[in-house]
Amino acid sequence: MSSLLPLGLGAIAVCAAFWLLGERQPQRGAPDDSDSHAPDGLVGLLSPLERPLRQAGLEVTPAGFCGLAAVACAAGDLAGWLLAPGAPLLALAGAAAGAAAPFVWLLRQASARARLFESQLLPTVVQLSEALAAGRSFQDALAVVARTGRPPMARELARTVDDLEHGVPLESAMRAFRDRVDSEDVAFFVAGVMLQRQAGGSLAELLDGIAQTLRQRFALRDLVRSLSAQGRLSGLLLSLLPVGIGMYMYWLVPNHISKLWTFAEPGSFRNCLPLLLCFLSEAIGFLWIRKLATIEY
Image 1 (spheres, helix red, strand yellow):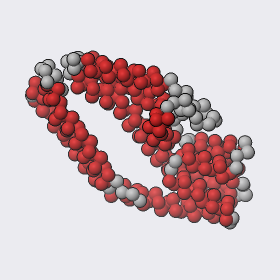
Image 2: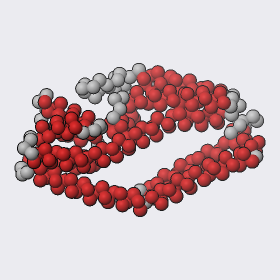
Image 3: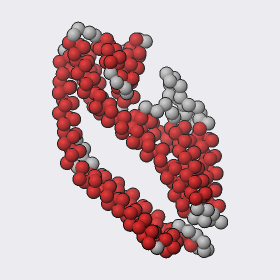
Image 4: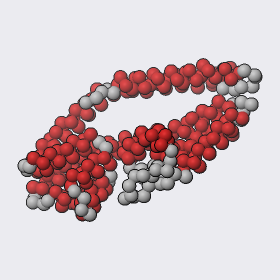
């Protein structure tokens, strides 16, 4: 009976994938109503995915991304079941790994893209200040940076220039740029430009001040990361240590350790509880150490 559990989970994952991938995908330039025909509960449940999807620059709805995760879950479940038909726990672990892999990749992609925006923001502000000092308007300066810059910053600035050329007010275009990038440093830059539009003054001098502030902020960020590097490395090593010990014990006494995930006898499903508690404790400890090693600046 327990051997049918992975097959049932895989069937559920496939059905969920067909349903979620059937949701209407967004069209570029169209309003974001891609989940308008989905249940309200589903839209509210998947709404936290909108921000990382936007940060990662993916043109996919939360429902569509969850559908891809369901496909990965079914693939992991099938792979674990084919590798060890008599060990349902391995199939369940493969399903969990397959379901979590897209979300881990999404968070890493969003984080990498945000760091890339942060690294390109300072040169962008300096170029804008130089273009304004040369007598160009702010829209022309944005167009110049969009042509000469590198993606993803140049691509987002090009979309902003395109909005301005189609009659969108500067305030609305800059707010849309801030929402697409979703970075604190970019929000600081946009707030400075909006403040200058309301209060007046030299925008080139304001951008010079923003550039100086960004230099100091980036220097502080590098200092914080260097000081917290030892804590983050210790957390990684402590998290990998139980996994390494478990693999070593399996190499020494495979018949003894394999009882944690094989259910040959009735009621032996309880044997996996220690292993599940180990994974749960491992996750809690990793998140706790990561929280302690993360310093807000």
